[in-house]
Image (cartoon, rainbow, N blue to C red; front, side, top):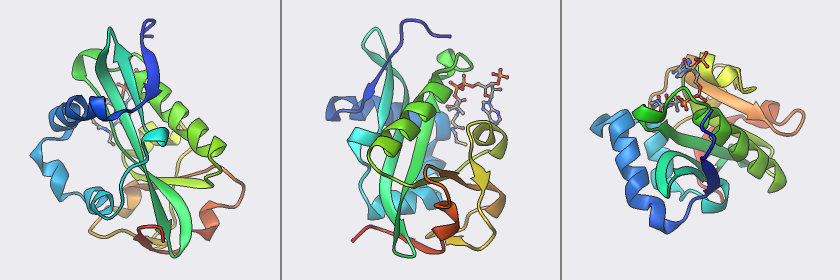
Length: 165
Ligand SMILES: CC(C)(COP(=O)(O)OP(=O)(O)OC[C@H]1O[C@@H](n2cnc3c(N)ncnc32)[C@H](O)[C@@H]1OP(=O)(O)O)[C@@H](O)C(=O)NCCC(=O)NCCS
């Protein structure tokens, strides 16, 4: 574990460091991803987005964006990234837990993301029923995952991902 890390909501002062971490983790190909199309439609919510700080430096980040799916409100989580030198020491999971806690407190009912099932299933995510959620771009259906914050919330998600009204 990284003992001295502080986890705090993101502020505009973090933006450049977060961009650098995303570039390091995903490279320029990140702009071609379907999740990026969603983030072009809707702005992430800083109060539901967190950074891991070590000695004042951002070493990890997670963002959450308010969206609607077939008219039902949900969040889309991503990107999640931790700087390579600090990987496998719990920062990723700590950011994920904080994101889910903050979303629950804010009254959100579900979170979706595109990611590697083995990592996220350990955090309660499950693969969404094939064809239920339509992203604005091609996504491997085995990587389209959801977390239920309120019982039955994932079953309500059917349709196209859009910005909230
Ligand atoms: C994925 C990522 C955010 C995890 O952050 P982290 O701080 O290293 O993760 P944690 O310390 O909380 O968890 C580490 C554990 O997750 C596992 N893990 C990491 N990435 C994984 C993946 N893609 N699939 C399955 N397991 C994974 C590690 O093997 C490790 O397992 P262990 O605890 O048994 O050793 C980080 O590795 C990263 O930034 N990767 C590049 C960007 C990325 O892939 N983002 C996620 C999009 S799917």
